[in-house]
Image (cartoon, rainbow, N blue to C red; front, side, top):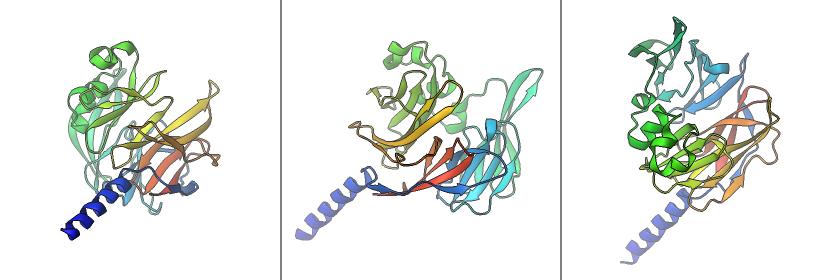
Length: 280
């Protein structure tokens, strides 16, 4: 009996740790540099590699988690937009071409080592992105109908007419974080219930516990970004922590490693991918 009590207490403490916000973090350090600006990092499922793209989401590069062995696997237009790893060796990409003045988007599987591609879905003018990520219900509407989602999801009627951008599903599939244009960052349950505003914020990236997420709070002068900080926010309590308060970087798009120990981001001021180590 005593042994069982000890095990139960240990498990409870472990859960508290897993669901906690970081206690400490390193200063941002350059991780991946290239001859051009890089952006939008995405970790592989095992955290061993990072995929990035270039300006306007042109092309895809792959690097090891420590920034070594950077190599280009695609130079296609739009190839790096919302890419998704389907395994540790393969990426799902949605490049496009212009045909008769229309953007035609196709779905491809791309080998992360060789760059060899295999077409999954032929080019179409109106690609349903939910089909790419396997989304359903509320998340599907946000992905496929960003302009009209606020008019179709009952809990968002108060924001009807506003666009939804950058929706992201929590690791356990229970919550969705998303932006409503000009209104900030929000979170809701997967069925649309429990809507909560997280205030000013963009480009949410969930921590593995599905209770905390990273987001950027960006300031601009109407022409360019002039400052930005990364915050860790607990979606239950609303408590937030600025983890780049002492940095002069301008983070835009962020990505949390699968184990939650690292945070990668693109720095708008120099086009380099940076990394922060997180401690819990």
